Length: 234
Image (cartoon, rainbow, N blue to C red; front, side, top):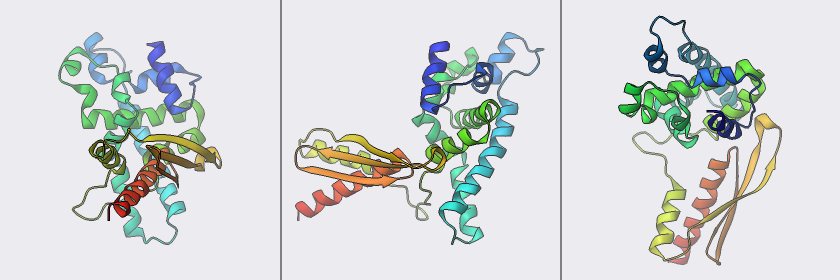
């Protein structure tokens, strides 16, 4: 268990002073009830409640800072997207959060480590644990980097384009090596960092882009390479 916790702490960028908080945030109620149905609550449901409130505040704060000219209605739509179970599920998958969960046997057998609601709830519980262990600043940094990023709603009825996947497929089609991504620079305070990411495709294609998260910067850089390839093919 300790090794798993250390791996997650590295992803979070925060070593917990109180490991019990982190462990509780990962403990599904099925694990507790399986051991002792009469035991006092030691699962992550209360943490979900607290984490949901913290997340809503920090997302609102970040959106107002990012988009000072947006009307309230547009900010509300963005917030609803960012705190939705679907979006939190995707974030949890990128963090490999399911690998660290403590589940009961039945939940384990039914694929609980990949369930949307379970992972979204666990992510909220993790936010609460981080807050209780270290206060608001580390949580703010985590939420801005991993959940908010550069917040944009997809066009109605459309999906967000995954330029990195598209570039990977293009490389395969052109029989080129797989794209290589590297972080060139990190700037700014912990709660408002910007990242400069470079992508190289073979010997001839290279691009750099900035973003408020490594993911968004990588997506922008990949999009630029795709555009270069499109221009080259004309």
